[in-house]
Length: 106
Image (tube, rainbow, N blue to C red):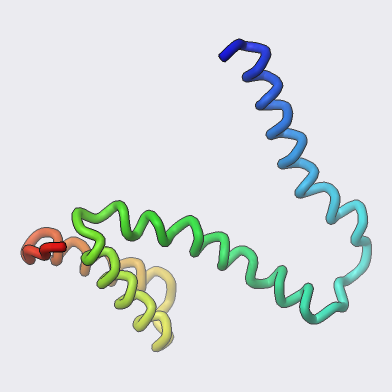
C-alpha cells in the first residue's frame, strides 16, 4: 500500500466522521418533536455499547460458556436494579471464579 493511499483513506475517514457529527447540528436547529425519532436517538448509545461489548464477552474468556453465564448474571442483576458498577463487578467475579476454579468444557 502506498503512502498516498493511506493519506487518502485517512482523509475519507476524517470527512465521514465529521459529517456524521456536523450534519445533524447544521440541519436540526430546534428541539426534536417526533416521539419515534427522540426515542430512537435516546437508545442509540445503549445499542452501540451492546454491539461493541457482546462479541468481547464471548471471545475474551477462556470459554464462551463462561462469558455467556456472566452475561446472563449481568442481565438478571441489572433487571433487579443493580447499577452499572455492581453489575460489572459481579460479572468479573463470575468470570474469574469460573475460569479459575471450575473446568467448563464446550
